[in-house]
Image (cartoon, rainbow, N blue to C red):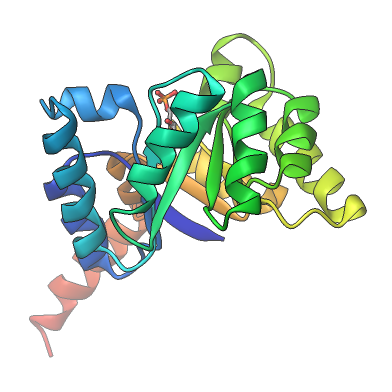
Length: 216
Ligand code: E4P
C-alpha cells in the first residue's frame, strides 16, 4: 500500500518525506485554504513547490463543476508537472471529464466517493485513482472500511485498473484497516502516519534497554 499525505502544508509534507515512506500528496480546496493559498498564480506555484518536494503523484483539485470548465482547469493543472493528478468530483460532468482526461493522457483522481456504485462509474470512466472518504462515512454511522473492501473486491473481480485511494483518514487504526482491506493507497494526515509509530511497550522496552545499557 502506498502512503500519501493529505495536506497542503509544506512543513508536514517535508516531515513525512524525511521519514522516507512518502509516495505522494493529496490536497483539496479546504486544505489549500487552510494554508492561506489564494489566487490562481499562488495555487499553481504551491502545486509546483509540492511536486518539487516529492517524487510521487500530487493530486490537485479542480474548482469547476461543468464539463468545459473542469477540462480547461484540469489541462492547466496537468501542465504544471508530470506528477500532477487532476482531482475531479464524482458528479455527472466530472465523470464525463474523467473520460475525456483518460482519452487525452491526463491522469485523474475521482474524489468525494461514498458508494461502490460511484466507484464503478469512476473506474469505467478511466480514473487513475478513486477516493472513498472513509472518515466522513464513519461520521454518518456507516462503515467506511467496509466500503474500501467492497470496492477493492469489485475492482479485482472486474479487472479495473483504477487504484483505490482511501481518503478522509482519521487515525492510525484506519491506516491498518485500509491495508487489511485491500486499499492501494492511503492518504493520511501526518498525525495518523506518526500514530503508527506508537506503542507503550516500545517506550517501556526502550527505557529499560537504555537504563540497562548504563550497566554495560
Ligand atoms: C482526500 O483526498 C480528501 O480530500 C480528504 O482525505 C478529506 O478528508 P476529511 O474528511 O478529513 O476532510
